[in-house]
Length: 381
Ligand code: NAD
Image 1: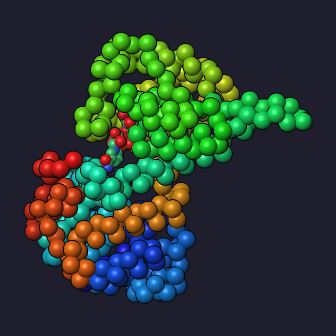
Image 2 (image 1 turned 90 degrees about the vertical axis):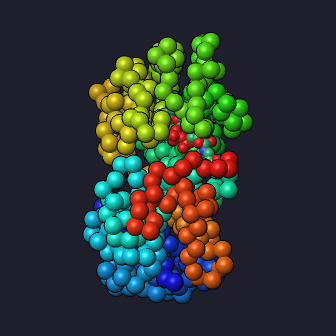
Image 3 (image 1 turned 135 degrees about the horizontal axis):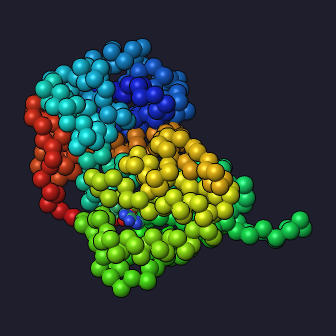
C-alpha cells in the first residue's frame, strides 16, 4: 500500500504532511511512500532529502493522487482534490467536518474513507495523534515571537550602563494549549507574564510556569468557570462583566496581549474591547489568536496587521503554524505517522480501518460510502 503526500494547494500554505523522517517510520510499518515534487520545499525538505529516505517522487499532483492508496495532507481537500478520490482510498487531513458538510458528502459518495485530524478525540491514548494541540503549541509560541518582533523593547528587564530597562508586561487571555505555550515562551524571554482563563483549575499550571494568574473579585468565579469535557462554555453576563472590569483596570499597564480564548463551535468571545485598546500605551502589541473565529478583540482584522490611532499594533494572522513550517510539518507528520501506526496493527503495510477503535472511529468522518460524522462519544477517557 502506498501513502502519498501532495503539495498543499491553499495559497501561502507552507506545511507538508510527510517529512523524510516520518516517511522512514511509515516504511517500517510496511508502506511505500510518495510525494508530489516540491511538496516539502516550503517547509525546508527538498525532493532529494525525500529520495534519500526512499520516497518516490511524482511529477504531478494528478499522478500522485492516482497512485496513492492513502493520501496524507494538511489542509482540507479542494473540489479538485475530492474529484481525485476514488473507491477504497483513504484521505487523512484537517477537514473541519462541521463546516464542510458538502465536501464530506462528496468524499463519501466517491467511496473514500476520510480521517479528519481535527476530530481526533482528546483522550490520553490519542495525544500523540493530537494535531490540534501540536499546531496550537506552535501558534502560542509564535504569537509571542511575533509580538516581540513588533514591540520596540526588550522582554526582560535589564540594568545597563546606558540605563535601566523595565521588563515587558504580557497578558495571555485563555490558558488552553496555545495559551500555555505562549505563557511558557513569554516567561522564558523574561517578561512579567499574567494569564487568565475561565477554567480556574488552570491557575496552578499557570503559576507553575512562572506567570501570575489574574483572579477576579467574583464569588461565583469558581463555579462559573464552567466547563464541559475540559472546554470552556459561555460565561454568565455577571462573570463577563467582572472579567472585563479587571481587564479594563490592567490594560493601561500591559505592553503585550495575547488572546487565545475560544469556546467550541462558537464565535470567539469579545474580551479585549475598543476602550481597552484605546487605554493602552503607544507601541503596545495585541496578537489575537482567535482571529479566525471573529477575534477576542473586535478591532482585529483577520490575516492582517493594523496599527490603531493611538499606536497599538493588532495582529490577526491565522497562519502561525505555517509561518514555522519546518517545525509544524515535523510535528504534524509525526501525528499522522502515529495515526498510521494505529491503523496498521500488523505492521504489514495494510490499513485495518477498525471502527471499533475509539480513536479511529472518532476521527473517521466518511467510511464505506457513508458519512460517519458526528461520531458517538468516546468510551474511554
Ligand atoms: P480552546 O482552544 O478551545 O480554548 C482556549 C482557551 O480559552 C481554553 O483554555 C478556554 O478555557 C479559554 N477560554 C474560553 N473562554 C474564555 C474567556 N471568556 N476568558 C478567558 N479564557 C477563555 O482550548 P484548547 O487549547 O483546545 O484546550 C481546551 C481543553 O482541552 C483544556 O482543558 C486542555 O487541557 C484540554 N486538552 C486535552 C487534551 C488531551 O487530553 N489529550 C489535549 C488537548 C487539550
